[in-house]
Image (tube, rainbow, N blue to C red):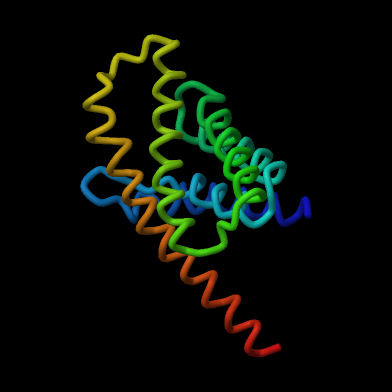
Length: 162
């Protein structure tokens, strides 16, 4: 279980460092570690999501420069929250997971903005939402939809083979 967590977190971090710049569209890059954390928490639960979110966010903080711990805290909260919600509700359908990913991307951006405001971050709220958080949330939704459908297809193929 620990090996899977480490492989997933480091894989998401490496994908973010290498693929996100290549996937950038008009200065909007997907938050690949957040997508990995949400899908991981939905499949493995709140503890796994919280630990994975913290580790992925810490790697993202260290690689990106800036305040260490902001991404780690927000991704840990998202992983814990969606893992808890996923255990209580039936969120196995892609039509639930993708809008949830978009909503959580916006929520994570809002929490990150609030944390940065504590340190007197100079960006105005409306500009940050309209040019950074909302476009990234939509992009995360499109990329997350592709990943969720690919996972569903893979699981269906494995069931057919068995």
